[in-house]
View 1: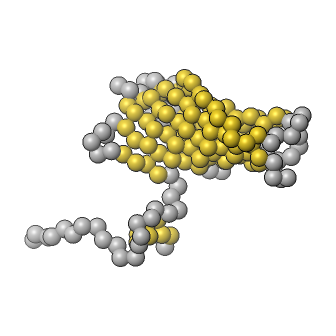
View 2: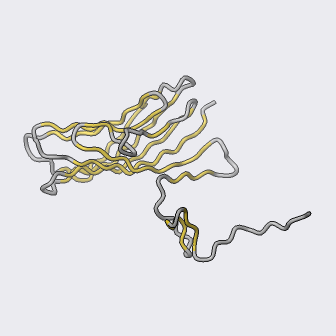
View 3: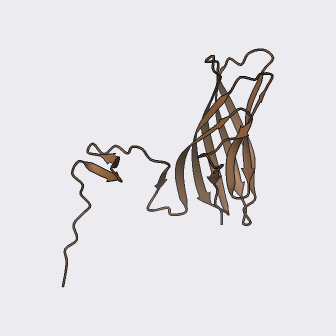
Length: 166
């Protein structure tokens, strides 16, 4: 028996397990990551993430140490807006723009990084730092805190533009 397929339609939005992910005004909400692809160029994509960490750590996507997956044979442009903050409200804010290469066996290397410091209120005698980190098919940032016992919370809104190299 023949059937007529209708276009996707969801009056009032679209939800998963009663959590709205697309509302009636076409706004995407409560997404873990967002991947955008061009239907003409299937060899490239952009994905956005939120990474977090405390003190000296490798920033992660969740509470079990998950890092951003970088596919083999890709060149990637990684941009992150980063905030570090202590309990007194002292802020370090920067934008890091990196070129990252991942070869055929998954060896991920940071080719270059440009840092733009937006706000640096780090107290005298303390060191707060953040650096890009590539590992096997993974990418993240490593943070350093020294000269204080205050908790430094780190958050990075990270965008990865990935293009197949081969």
